[in-house]
Length: 66
Image 1 (cartoon, rainbow, N blue to C red):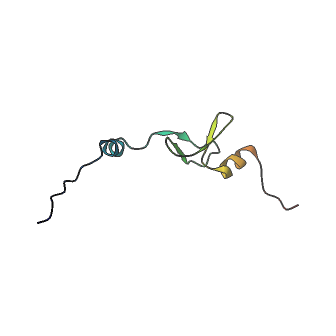
Image 2 (image 1 turned 180 degrees about the vertical axis):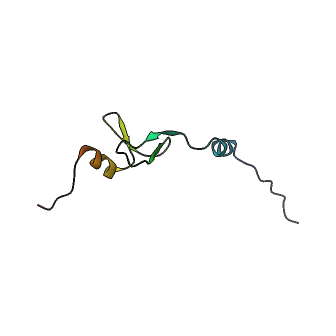
Image 3 (image 1 turned 30 degrees about the vertical axis):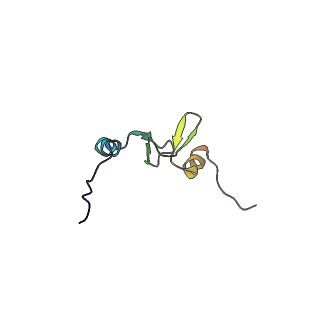
């Protein structure tokens, strides 16, 4: 006879799934990516950026051959 296993749900997981991600704002470079609480984003000079390419675009930096 097999043991009966009950499916127990983690209340923290259920809560976060119902609530959804908390959007803090949009990327400062203007690309439209959302800055979401709990994920890694770049914070520089009071602004949030989705990744390093967004930051480089914002400050006007570019790759060049030397």
